[in-house]
Amino acid sequence: MESLSKDKKVQELFQSVVDATNAGLARFERVKRFRILPMMLSIDGGHLTPTMKVKRRAVAEEFALMIDAMYAKARGE
Image 1 (spheres, one colour):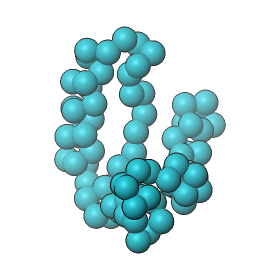
Image 2 (cartoon, rainbow, N blue to C red):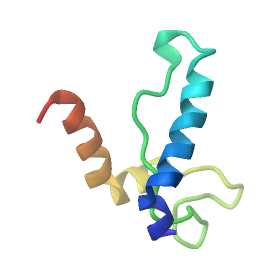
Image 3 (tube, helix red, strand yellow):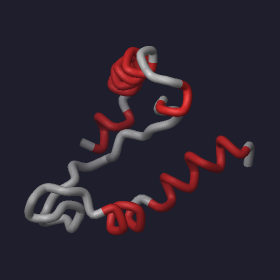
C-alpha cells in the first residue's frame, strides 16, 4: 500500500477522478486537496468502528503531520 500511495500513476489516476467529479460541483463543494493514505483504514487499526464508520479523531491524530503539511502548502509555508 505504501508504495502505491507514492506512485505517480496512481496519484494521477486519483487526480483525474477528483477532477471529473469536481466538474459537476459548485466551487464550495469541490475537493481542493487530497492525499492517498499509505495504508488501508481498518477496525483492527483503530481507524473504523465495528459498523465501518471512520473514527475521525483517531485518523486525524494518526495522520496529523500529513494533514498539517497539506494545509501548510495552501498557506504558502
